Length: 64
Image 1: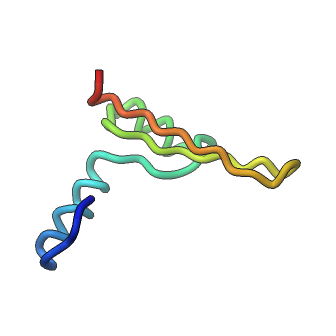
Image 2 (image 1 turned 30 degrees about the vertical axis):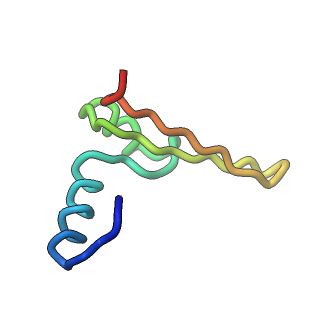
């Protein structure tokens, strides 16, 4: 997402994220549904309570 210069542009960005991205935990059932649906970009995070850390992963199926 670049600089937003109008409300219409912001709306377009938000609609793209809703349509083309999954953002959330790999443990959420929506993760599996998003993979099955072929969402092009999957951004997941996992919390490790032992060492109080977060791991982030991005799977972008639009890049070779």
